[in-house]
Image (cartoon, rainbow over all chains, first blue to last red; front, top):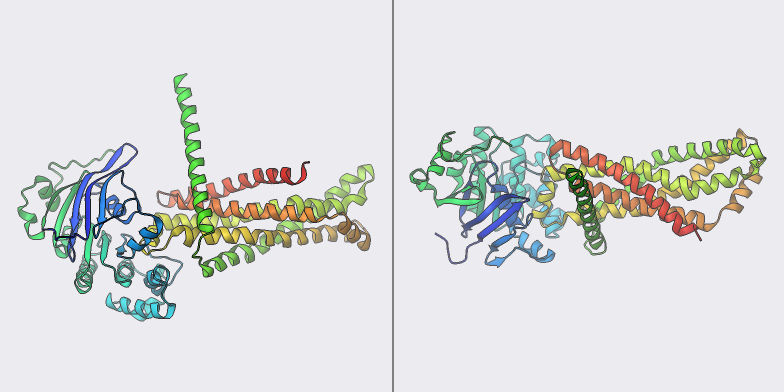
Length: 258
Length: 258
């Protein structure tokens, strides 16, 4: 299941906020060129897991390795070097609203990789075309775009610097079913064409089935099931069954009380 | 009794935690302030925002303060026949106190609030996380340009404000109170010492640093959507205004108490 040198390897990762334990010994690996989707309800630690890998949060215990290199506790310069391998599509797009669309896409090239503006601009428009956006859109500001278009720009920005690993944070949340499928297709296309490793988190099962090679389910800060996408329906795990069929009744109790 | 003590303890601990966070943030900002790379475009943009666009506000504030200062000191000093001191009172209070303090407070309201709102919105919409994933240090990209601009632009604003304020006092003294223009200007010039202006400019630089720092700090640590950004904005203005008044006393003490 895992190749010799996994692209991302999380081992026994623990993270808590005050008394609230969010990650409780999480283990997960993403192989080279593999697309792993982590499913799970709200508040189960999906986002915290992604942010821990990105170094936006620091886990208390455990190990996170990128290409076999431990990244917890890396210094500033080393962290920036590792970040060069990443692209990320944020849930809300997280586009910089003070910049034009093409400047958003070119941001990582200009600021992160010190590319000349003119050259970065050409690449930005090329990437925009890849996600099906015209050159006119590139001159607009992000606030003028619809939610689906913002997601596409976010995707173009994530792939602009040719990353080795892309994270997708709820890529289809808040989109209509057709636009969601368009985004799914774009994700598959980008991942396949670039040959990158992808780690996505979602609670949209249609999207998960479509973009995943492997699905892992997170519950209370642990991975409770992990297997190829084809096996998910015969997982025989009551938690997974409840989640993929969207039943209110089952072993997972929603914490309605805040 | 125990309840009361635990409440007091909690308040004190919360205060110490907040102070510690601010000190760490300041140290971090100072570190990035003296280490390249810099973003010249952003520094210039902030300088224009703070320096150029604050001119009307600062000009209006200081011209009316200079005018009222001349009027008040004239009517007050007339009680013991010391009207001749008006020019000295205007120029000394303007350069030492009113110029820097009034400009500082006005800019705190105008710029500090805008900084906290902009950076706070970037925080809650994950734009700051997006910067990190694009290999750009948010301290360098967002905080350093603002602090540099505050540090350099406030003294310039105050210098302009000083001149406008003294001019306001001059107008009232000549056209309303009937002073002789030549005598008034000579007295203004003779009473003024280098230290008066210099101490005011030092104050201005410190205030500029405080305004930018508090704006960035509150924005950077805001959480919880629109409400959190609103709270950050309020905190930025209130905390920087109070710090300005405190540091005004401290700097005056350092310069003039012997």
